[in-house]
Length: 320
Figure 1 (spheres, rainbow, N blue to C red):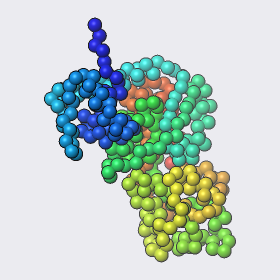
Figure 2 (figure 1 turned 135 degrees about the horizontal axis):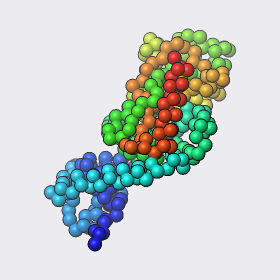
Figure 3 (figure 1 turned 30 degrees about the vertical axis):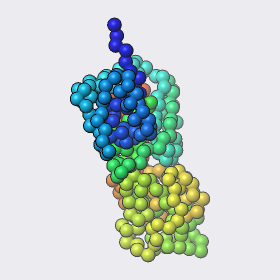
Figure 4 (figure 1 turned 90 degrees about the horizontal axis):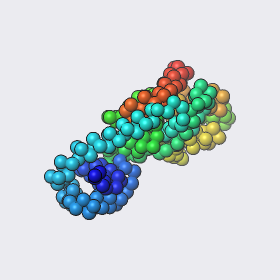
């Protein structure tokens, strides 16, 4: 007679909290609240009739029975993930779900996606623009892994901004990134034409806070230091949490934006934006794609990943 299993959500909450020895980290990983994780664990303890954790003021300790069960539970979740991959691999066409950072989805992926659709009309592509979790307690890698795992729980491919330090998952860097001032060509003429970096003191600085949100130096501070400019206040001016909004302000000639030219390629090509200076500063982060292991066994995923590599190569060639 098969064993009656407890609710899957309770098992997931226990496995994550036990592996991390932290309810808070488990909550980040599962994209729920700490209270929800605690509730699921207590429900599991009541269901099983055993204590799983010894709880202290600022720490958790596994009981002996929990220590014995944890490796098997982890293996079980790995087996379920592999089973789902096998089931999906039987679909030659069908649907393909892609989760991407909003700025990347809007300003890089969308202008190019028509080429994939034309090449693979049998694949129904679904794009989900999602925000990456920011770091918690200075642990950016914890949040990055939590984001990847959460996105891949219901997506075939995830495209994120970061460093890609995630093990046990297919991770491939697509684009290296750099920053430079970007603005409307209208700012190159007029009362205070932008001709040299020193002229920035006469213009409003627009701030793409992408770097700062993910534990890096603010873009303007980084670029101005590399340019040797010390008489421009790198902190003044409006701040935008989404690069999409910052680029719209730049197109409208509101001010000068320090951001990633790879996200402005289409607008630079059409003359809506210009990058007036030669200096670009390389960032430690990049855009990378992630998929679960064995994802390439599904033809639709393999085709999309190959297409992303090709488009990223074109993008690199266009900016060099």
